[in-house]
Length: 131
Picture (tube, rainbow, N blue to C red):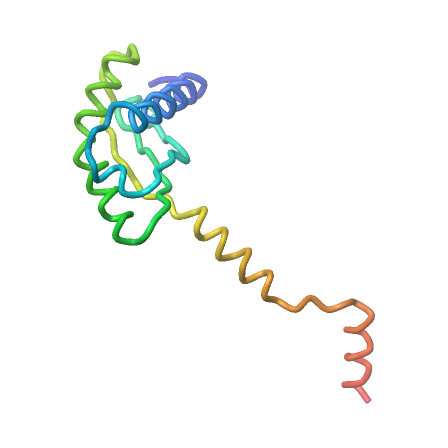
Protein backbone atom coordinates (compact mmCIF):
# COMPACT_ATOMS: atom_id res chain seq x y z
CA UNK A 1 0.00 0.00 0.00
CA UNK A 2 1.32 3.42 -0.96
CA UNK A 3 1.78 6.20 1.56
CA UNK A 4 -0.48 9.25 1.48
CA UNK A 5 2.16 11.49 -0.09
CA UNK A 6 2.58 9.03 -2.96
CA UNK A 7 -1.20 8.76 -3.43
CA UNK A 8 -1.46 12.56 -3.49
CA UNK A 9 1.34 12.85 -6.04
CA UNK A 10 -0.17 10.18 -8.30
CA UNK A 11 -3.55 11.90 -8.00
CA UNK A 12 -2.15 15.24 -9.15
CA UNK A 13 -0.24 13.57 -11.99
CA UNK A 14 -3.40 11.84 -13.19
CA UNK A 15 -5.31 15.11 -13.00
CA UNK A 16 -2.70 16.89 -15.10
CA UNK A 17 -2.39 14.12 -17.69
CA UNK A 18 -6.13 13.60 -18.10
CA UNK A 19 -6.60 17.37 -18.47
CA UNK A 20 -4.07 17.31 -21.29
CA UNK A 21 -5.84 14.33 -22.85
CA UNK A 22 -9.15 16.18 -22.77
CA UNK A 23 -7.61 19.09 -24.65
CA UNK A 24 -5.45 17.19 -27.13
CA UNK A 25 -5.93 13.44 -27.37
CA UNK A 26 -9.56 12.44 -26.88
CA UNK A 27 -11.15 12.74 -30.31
CA UNK A 28 -14.70 11.70 -29.38
CA UNK A 29 -17.09 14.46 -30.48
CA UNK A 30 -19.38 13.71 -27.55
CA UNK A 31 -16.70 14.87 -25.10
CA UNK A 32 -16.69 18.28 -26.79
CA UNK A 33 -20.47 18.69 -26.38
CA UNK A 34 -20.02 20.44 -23.02
CA UNK A 35 -17.12 22.33 -21.52
CA UNK A 36 -15.33 19.82 -19.27
CA UNK A 37 -12.98 20.47 -16.38
CA UNK A 38 -11.52 18.06 -13.87
CA UNK A 39 -12.37 19.11 -10.33
CA UNK A 40 -10.75 16.29 -8.36
CA UNK A 41 -9.07 12.91 -8.68
CA UNK A 42 -9.33 10.33 -5.90
CA UNK A 43 -6.85 7.47 -6.06
CA UNK A 44 -7.22 4.38 -3.91
CA UNK A 45 -4.49 3.53 -1.41
CA UNK A 46 -3.18 0.69 -3.59
CA UNK A 47 -3.08 2.99 -6.66
CA UNK A 48 -5.30 0.59 -8.61
CA UNK A 49 -8.43 2.74 -8.93
CA UNK A 50 -8.84 6.39 -9.87
CA UNK A 51 -12.12 8.28 -9.62
CA UNK A 52 -11.98 11.35 -11.84
CA UNK A 53 -14.59 13.95 -10.95
CA UNK A 54 -15.53 16.21 -13.86
CA UNK A 55 -17.59 19.36 -13.98
CA UNK A 56 -19.48 19.86 -17.23
CA UNK A 57 -20.87 23.19 -18.32
CA UNK A 58 -23.80 23.00 -20.70
CA UNK A 59 -27.35 21.77 -21.07
CA UNK A 60 -28.54 18.51 -19.52
CA UNK A 61 -28.41 16.90 -22.95
CA UNK A 62 -24.82 18.06 -23.50
CA UNK A 63 -23.86 16.80 -20.03
CA UNK A 64 -25.31 13.36 -20.67
CA UNK A 65 -23.64 13.18 -24.08
CA UNK A 66 -20.30 14.27 -22.62
CA UNK A 67 -20.49 11.67 -19.85
CA UNK A 68 -21.22 8.97 -22.45
CA UNK A 69 -18.14 10.05 -24.39
CA UNK A 70 -15.98 10.08 -21.26
CA UNK A 71 -17.16 6.64 -20.21
CA UNK A 72 -16.46 5.33 -23.72
CA UNK A 73 -12.91 6.73 -23.54
CA UNK A 74 -12.03 5.18 -20.15
CA UNK A 75 -9.96 2.41 -21.75
CA UNK A 76 -8.02 4.90 -23.86
CA UNK A 77 -7.40 7.10 -20.83
CA UNK A 78 -6.16 4.15 -18.76
CA UNK A 79 -3.84 2.95 -21.53
CA UNK A 80 -2.45 6.44 -22.14
CA UNK A 81 -1.92 6.99 -18.41
CA UNK A 82 0.04 3.74 -18.32
CA UNK A 83 2.33 5.08 -21.03
CA UNK A 84 2.81 8.52 -19.46
CA UNK A 85 3.02 7.70 -15.74
CA UNK A 86 5.47 5.09 -14.53
CA UNK A 87 3.43 2.78 -12.31
CA UNK A 88 3.51 -0.97 -11.90
CA UNK A 89 -0.11 -1.17 -13.06
CA UNK A 90 -2.26 1.50 -14.65
CA UNK A 91 -5.15 2.46 -12.38
CA UNK A 92 -8.68 1.60 -13.44
CA UNK A 93 -10.33 4.89 -14.39
CA UNK A 94 -13.88 5.93 -13.55
CA UNK A 95 -15.38 9.27 -14.60
CA UNK A 96 -17.95 10.76 -12.21
CA UNK A 97 -19.91 13.94 -12.85
CA UNK A 98 -19.30 16.53 -10.15
CA UNK A 99 -22.21 18.90 -9.61
CA UNK A 100 -20.78 20.60 -6.53
CA UNK A 101 -20.16 23.88 -8.39
CA UNK A 102 -23.77 23.92 -9.53
CA UNK A 103 -24.98 23.15 -6.01
CA UNK A 104 -22.77 25.89 -4.57
CA UNK A 105 -24.18 28.38 -7.06
CA UNK A 106 -27.71 27.34 -6.10
CA UNK A 107 -26.92 27.80 -2.39
CA UNK A 108 -25.48 31.27 -2.97
CA UNK A 109 -28.62 32.18 -4.90
CA UNK A 110 -30.81 30.97 -2.02
CA UNK A 111 -28.75 32.87 0.54
CA UNK A 112 -28.99 36.03 -1.53
CA UNK A 113 -32.77 35.68 -1.56
CA UNK A 114 -32.94 35.71 2.24
CA UNK A 115 -33.84 38.98 3.85
CA UNK A 116 -31.22 39.67 6.49
CA UNK A 117 -32.54 41.83 9.27
CA UNK A 118 -30.66 44.28 11.43
CA UNK A 119 -30.19 43.04 15.07
CA UNK A 120 -31.76 46.25 16.45
CA UNK A 121 -34.76 45.74 14.20
CA UNK A 122 -35.11 42.17 15.49
CA UNK A 123 -35.04 43.38 19.13
CA UNK A 124 -37.71 45.99 18.42
CA UNK A 125 -39.87 43.40 16.71
CA UNK A 126 -39.48 40.96 19.63
CA UNK A 127 -40.40 43.64 22.19
CA UNK A 128 -43.53 44.52 20.18
CA UNK A 129 -44.57 40.87 20.15
CA UNK A 130 -44.22 40.62 23.95
CA UNK A 131 -46.49 43.59 24.59
